[in-house]
Length: 224
Image 1 (cartoon, rainbow, N blue to C red):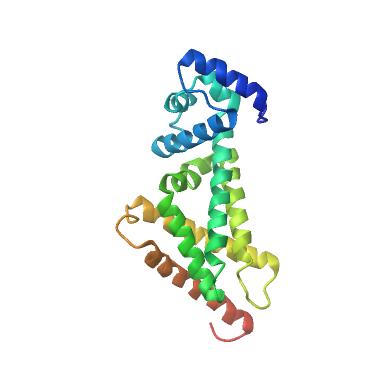
Image 2 (image 1 turned 120 degrees about the horizontal axis):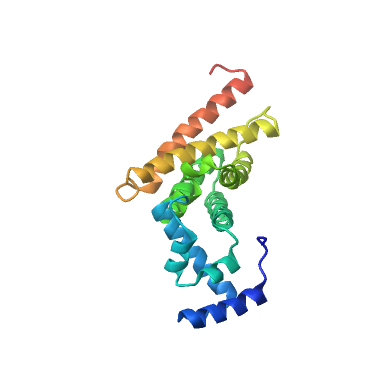
């Protein structure tokens, strides 16, 4: 079975399985959305490796045939969640920096958007950037794809004379790594509920901006 989804077939399967299971009928697209929302919470609670398809099916109130009609495997479900959340985070950053009047404000507003999204989507962030999932090449590739897309976005904000596009991408990955690592530990330590996300984001942004200014000075030939 492939990752491809046949709406007509799944809709038929959903109806027959739901009749036998006593669950509420939903159109195929709505059922798929519901399963993803539930899976995200189960993954966040138990981790990818601690979650079984049986548990997702039970939490979603569907039978395993319905679940497998929508997702051929747990990995396929996880990859779709990662891609979806990565796109949400990217949109949040784009919207956050839209009104930035200059490069420094782009850094500040970008970190605010990043931390703000993470604080509002805590479970989603823990799934997206879980350290344990990186041990699996397939899952690591899904995460790396998201990080690369965001790093590419950040690279476009870096205006340092004399740097090549590839050098900007490397710095973009550095900024994303800083944001991801500090945000993950910020959430892990339970600081999100007791601190102002914008204030903490500004502290991290100051750290990143100081580093970028250092690159600018070295590039221009002035003292570091």
